[in-house]
Length: 323
Image (cartoon, rainbow, N blue to C red; front, side, top):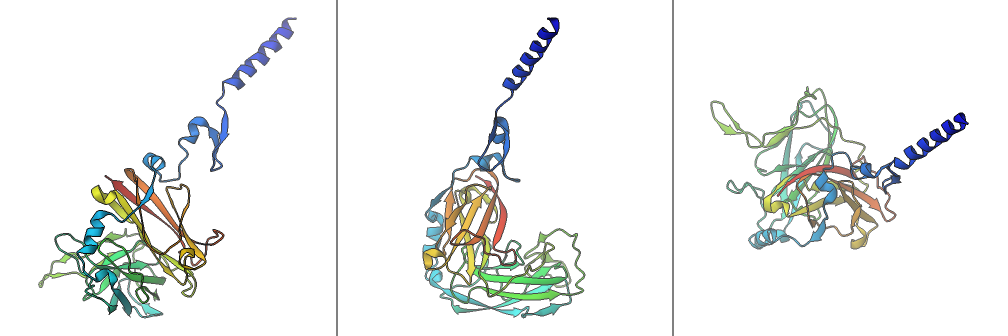
């Protein structure tokens, strides 16, 4: 009898323990855990504020509209670029690769230059491999890609407005492949921007614009296939500039469905619900919360399948918002 009561006691204890556990649930992302776990299930790098934000597509900000109005006919321009250096297929025996461009086309007042007061102005976006772009303002002087590792590289360029919206006319975008051989780059050296840094020597002069680059290689890019070039957003957004943030990109060898083509641009923020851009034009998103956010841009076909091209048609960047 005593033995029977003992087993009944053990059974009741086990039942109590099972009932006291939190229920296990499956969230839409496939993660299995308790209710407490689900609230903390975020993509790597995503902040608490990223998960809570509600982004809305809005019109071009008033500040940008005023800049457009003050520029005359520049936004109707069709600037075209041509590579002088490096030439296609060139071999460079130095870790410093000099970039020289020729600007032509219907300029209508468009000229790259930086205003010393606002530190803004027309410029060229220079992209080595699939790294974030660097802004190139003074085309009268070469731009230097410094500490470039040995190997094959892809260089992409296109003209931009002061607020980093790209010109999308024919001839604006140019791409070239080159190889660095025995350049002597230090791949452990961190990437550091030093554009317009003053050099101290007998004849003090302004150093060429440029940057010490991250270690990277070209990827198996096919210049004849559809290619998405990520442009914006990038970097830090503060104050009024954080109210509405632009997504912009360059599209090569492809048309989006809204322009009569077969492709779409898919974007997501902080690993959230994917959305689509169906016309080749920038969009502006408001509702950002303070903190770090990841933005992913992808080129996909009508069936939402990623279009592969050297790994460049799916790009993720991180920005920081501080209102």
